[in-house]
Image (cartoon, rainbow, N blue to C red; front, side, top):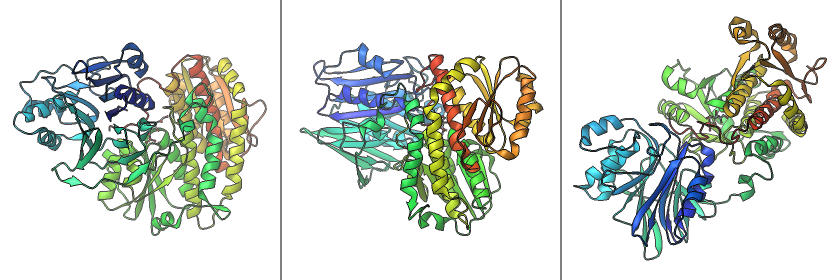
Length: 600
Ligand code: F6R
């Protein structure tokens, strides 16, 4: 979702902002903009529009001596994606310029109460913040005006604001939406993600909610102070070294990040194995297992792909660890108030660790005294910091919006967690996971074949994945992958449910793809596929060697029944990828989607 970058320093600020915004592109956006100070013209210049950061870079000239700027990628929430609604936004008199990530829930009430005489030029809630600061600045200092504004805002927000009458100071506020500060001898950079700081910061700081930051240029030096919203100066948080391997964030010769990330999956499994290897077993630490002492039930909360990993995690908790478990879509859990067992523990699964729906659940269950454990790819993320403990999935930065390697990482870590908790350590995970990594590699090596299958068999605008048990959960993920990057109307259906309604949608040439990795339901799923074939659907079967029959289309090297999702998902990811390439869509940045969903 929206990304923000701000800079004050000796470097060419427009470069820092535009490179930073490019690094945040993965979050998803539909418009972008920049405001910088031009010392020759002694004025702030703004360029913004619908479209890509590359356009901002190529369509305008930026003077070499610009050293103060803010920028934004916008994922539309209030108002359509057009130039008017793109950030930065100005206050009515043009004195204050702002970029904002998040949603102000009470913006209408605030306009009604404080800003009746103001004219708004956009549909965004962001302009309200700029105008509130302007309104209060008539009677208060700028710092006080910003603090008063913060005290009135409800919702999630991280914003940067410039007072155009002061070209040496940048103000920043963080509450619920992510914001970090990067530092180097040359200046100070702020951004929604540490990726924005690459090449421009040597170290960075994670900010707590309700922080108000003032960044100043002072005789060639740069400094910042962090205050709470009352105005008390806070101690600086722990300083982290920037230790990014630039390789990790390049495409490494692949045409798209998504294909690179699909191909990295066997390596992710091996990395997880190396990180969780204790002696010759795969285990989580006693700090984590101790959390489960006396726990009668596990609740798993997640969204999207991570929710699909959670469905598999539930099976692991119940079948391997023998702990009853339930999975909820986080945004549903937040509003349905299920009856919670008193001795419960919450597992939050999130690639980014920033998903707002999950965070609101986390705050809620913590308030009720429940233990919380995050499984994430980003150890510096909000969910990792705010839960009692976290487990890292070590998948490396995932840039493509469609999640792939994080999904298999989450499943692998859930398997290790459940197996450590099981009294008998029921699975020989070291050999089973090694085998799964080889099976994954096998199918990735045969990806040209999958591309041919796509060319021959996926020809309609609709597509259905069917499966039972663990296969059904993979079908949900397979369908999500296909719909998010090809915009095809795709569903993952429990195979036995097809006849209970969805069969009405099956017609000539519609692909129905069956995933069959579980021997005990092999024949049942095949019968359901026959029913679809009888309606002239185009059938496709993804099976394992020991469940395959006759001429199954994609047969994968055998793996342990419980680890089959690690492998069966790969052809589905590749089907989505090659179909999107065939349709010439922007594989890594599908329309309307954001990598990190930081609003509820
Ligand atoms: C789909 C996808 C999303 C995310 C969801 C949750 O490919 O990436 O469905 O899984 O937005 O995000 P995280 O895992 O960051 O909480």
